[in-house]
Length: 487
Image (cartoon, rainbow, N blue to C red; front, side, top):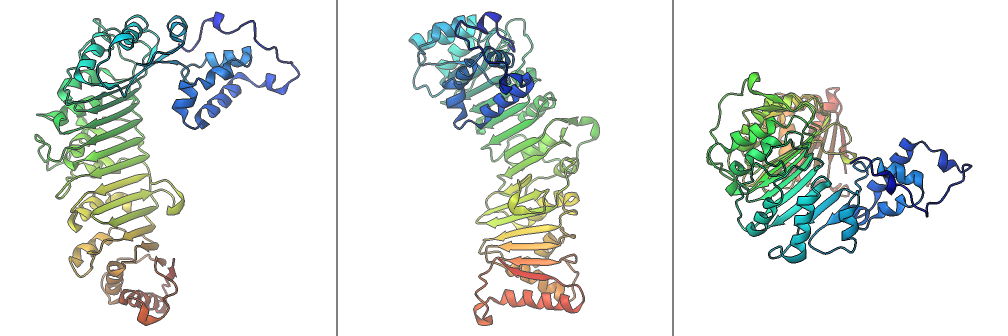
């Protein structure tokens, strides 16, 4: 599919470019890079490049440009769309050499008439040209869809299907593979809706070439041993680069809380995985990462929905195996949410958050300590700590030992920055340091507080700021100066 028939590479209308023009001497690989950059820079990409066929206009400039583009159909995402709406070019689509993108989303009601004819014709008679499939609908539409996809699709790279109306599918073994169960070559997969894992496990186990997986499950997805089924599927996806898992499940029915981490012999390395997003109960994530490692991870975002203390038995091992080292940490206490982010750069305001952990409603200091404890090996290198304290009930006088233990996990912090105006907790920690207790912020060199700098009158400033001033003065006298800024 990377090359198109020679007869489609030239027409009688092709322009002949002067050999004196510099553009005619650009190497093909450079020209391809220019086309690819232009493609990625187009606003409303899906609408313009693919559906309005902007690429088609470029291909008509000259033979050389067309030859370069048609030799890289996959990289440049070239193809024609077929969907429920009748296109004016349907005969050309079915008779030409182009890859076909099938898009049957946003359909209200049953697929009938010409829309059904097009779907059947393309999927049954042109399955060797189909490169992308997007499909969503009711159980009746999916029954029609599965009946015309029981043959091999040798060039299918992307599949996105969404189940509606509580439909619980049983994906046939022959889906996209045919009676001979041909190998799947899928690279991108999106599955959303009410999908029992037991009904799709066979399909997931056969999709071993996947590089990008996006799964959203609701409560109906999980039954007995569902987490084992999902883990087995993930362990077979050794080419995986990006993994996005979400579930509304609050209380997994079959998960037991292990007391000991798994042994090395049970762990499969997903060495190419660089992005991992998870949203759901911690016990399910812990069950999944018990059997995998991902040392090349660069972007991690775990959001836990737990109402109680999160389960983190296997999380320390999984995180410690990640090769990244982090220089800064960002923590937010906002409303009922606690979020922690680890960052490679020391400049928090100008970098991408590479590692994020979040706790849902009704979190506690114990939960925070549990989460940061799982990260303890990574926190040692942190030199900058940015804390947002917007919670009204963050008070150092309550559970002081827990708060102190929490901040003791950042022993090498040199710069402390606060935001939100609630500095009671930080002031309490610094007060204890000033009174001779174990020095929590022993390496501290700089404090930045987000307070109104116009409040210079001592009577206008909160007592916690006076405590911080005293701490700074004491450090100065001890020959360990700490700079204090108001942002």
